Image (spheres, rainbow, N blue to C red):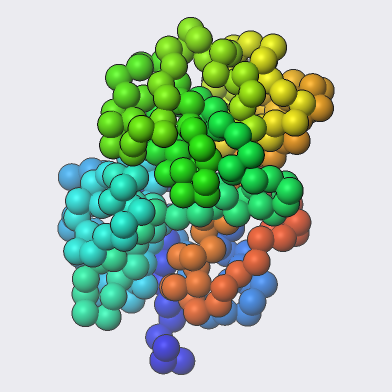
Length: 283
């Protein structure tokens, strides 16, 4: 990397104003004394391809991609990792020196690393995993749980067809439950994951009976506003190990930052405090 070139990266979404990613990457740039910038960019769908082809010429090393562009970014990429292809979405793009766009998805990596940091005794193969929701984040979580050795992933979604689609794409170790039977899939589950927005500030509550939840289960919620959702509070009261969702956001950012700025960053308590000091909706 030439000392005369300031590396640039950023995050693309629509809208993007409330994203915490600039605060996160800005902290690392300052902490490690690196010369670079990370910029939020609000890009409409019709402009995405033109923007992605132009950014490398402007000195950008890559970008994060968030809602609603993750699937389209994958389609536009010249090179795609196996995990991004399997998930069907990209959240991290690397602009290569030859101008080609390399697409990856680090959401599953961030999910697993968050559990390993905050629940070091957790083992994916300890028993079935129960996953609530079948959106893009759910696909990444299900892939990660299967790769980590979960013997079965129980999946439910308010629209059953979306859960069935994931099962069709990712395999027979997935069992689909009707949303009305979500409480039943918690029986003997070793890992429970909420990937829906239910329970987030400003959203309806997650109403799933926890009667079958074992005190030995690990429960995690991808929502991090609030940090302790009602699901996590109830699970903690039952004796479960709980992990909030902020760490997934922080850990998924690590691989991209390393590729763009040449420094592998650490996820620390100081980073968590810095990112959470930023008020506003979760993004």
